[in-house]
Amino acid sequence: MKDLYILAPLLIVILSAGLGFFVYERDTKNPRNYFFLALMCVYILINLFEIKAVMAGGAAGAKSYLIAQALPFLFLPPVVFCFGNAYNNFIRIEPEWLYWLINLPFFIVFLVLARLIENASLKLSVGVFDGGFAVHAGFPADYLVPFYALAAGFSLWPFVKGYRLRSADPAFYGETVSVFYSIAVPAAVAFGFMTYLNFFHDASYGGAFIYPLGVFPATTFLSVVLLAMSIVRHKSFNISIMFNNALIYSALAIIISGVYVVIQNFLESFFQSIFKSSAEIYGIISALIVAFLFEPLNRKLNDFINNIIDFFKSINKPIGAENEAPEARAHFSSADLKSLELAYLVFIFCFTALLFTAKLAPDLSPRTVYMISAMTLSLSALYILYRILHLPFNMIAYAALSIFFIFTHILFVSLTLGAGFYFEASGALVSLLCLISAAGLIGRIIAVRIDEIAFLIPLCLVAAFADIWSVFYGVTSELVTKKSAALDFLLLRYPTLGSGHLKQYIGISDFLFATILMGCAMNFKLNAKKTYVGVAVSFLLTFTTVVITYKGIPAIPFISLAFIIVNAPRLRINYEDIKTMFIVIFGAGAVFYMISILRRIISN
Image (cartoon, rainbow, N blue to C red; front, side):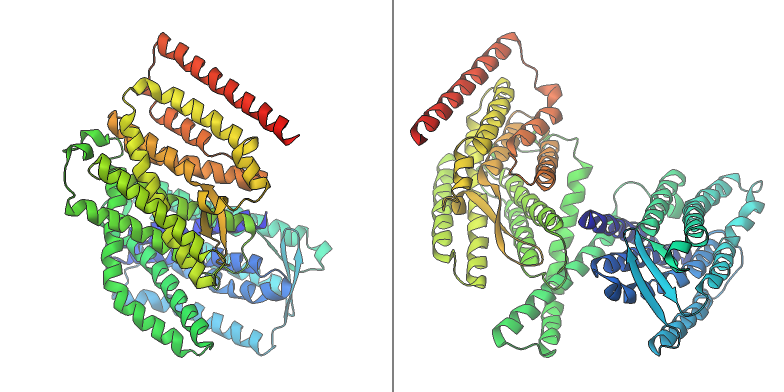
């Protein structure tokens, strides 16, 4: 449960950051916008400190993070007050920097409390129970609750005074009421629950202040969702619900910060491992290198985010309806090469990020690590396959390149398997890129040879049945049971988040079949983009099932189901096709059953 609990606040952090930057970028000079961002930052800190307290693994480690929780909670009332005042102009404050003077006393209070705790003038002890933490204070901490509740209640006063607008401007009054409910209702529920715990159930904990886990993340999540719904409903902050440059730069600001941290951590770890030293000079050198890389990274990330936004904006537009189908073009264009280059760079970055993030995520549970590693690289590999499908088709060139990529994959796996950490990781990266590229090219060749749309449903059903048989009873099961060396060549080895160890996650046949179906979607003028999204969702379902069952799960049944659901309106078959389909399925089943009997006889 611990890993699932950690993931929930992390998703709230991402949601809060995205919404905050989205609003702020619309008008960076408007105090209403930047105090909305400040409110989202308070929510983010509440969730992050609770995550760190849970990950600390005990009362001693959690103590510092619970003390740090005082920072976002102290700033919550003044930030809400300033946001509400800027929203309905309750008190005219000019110049706008005077808003920050309202927050200054709370910052001073936090510094004083931190200093008193550091000097042991205020003694705190923390205990752990199943549902959270029990904080024992050397002073009557319960007496602070009414004062904090009073400050929190007063922070909502600008919204309450907005009642005067109900007749003058009913539309704006409805908007302010919606925002007020989005903040006040979750806060009131959380405060009531905390009051109930601490004043009616504190006897069993010796009068300690009870900090239950999950209450504040749930509160912030509810508030963020209600605020987002209010923004969309009332079109607050002049926000269009369509994707625009504000969303691009908001996502860009978040992603580029993560890229900066990952690359600097990678460079610092690399320097320290080479020179066997932990001197801080390597951190400075790493920061300088990343500073030089900032502008090209900015351009690449901007292109990547623009591609994602264009993809979802036109997701209902079939790929065959574009100006020129890939198979009709004879030569590569600069756009083809640019998009393919970007896809490979995304995969390389994700691989490197997972390989060198041991410092950033040292204590995650195996299930969380598995999901993050598997989904990150599988989706980036799927992106490469999707871009390969857009290349001009040439049978001879595709066949030759496939052979070259397969040979290179085998060569690098053979040469680097079991070598040093960096050599094996480098070889695994090259072999992965070659294997994924080969799957994309071969899948495209097979997809071109399928000339009847009626074959697609039988293909999906037979492939799903064959994959289930292979994983549980057939060749795949035997290879896994015997830990055959062939698995190093047939399965994709991903680095594990937090440790960097290379592990086998998924078979190349799953990517090959996904490419075939996406290629067929393009050939028959189906919706290739929705098919791509459906395959991505099928990978998520597969890895989630693996995490739940702790068993190897075939992915092709999920891929087949997603393809049929997405393209169901176009996949109509007649009676003859149904009869042929059942003949093929039962024939394949009989063949698999006979093979199983023969293998059992031979093994006995």
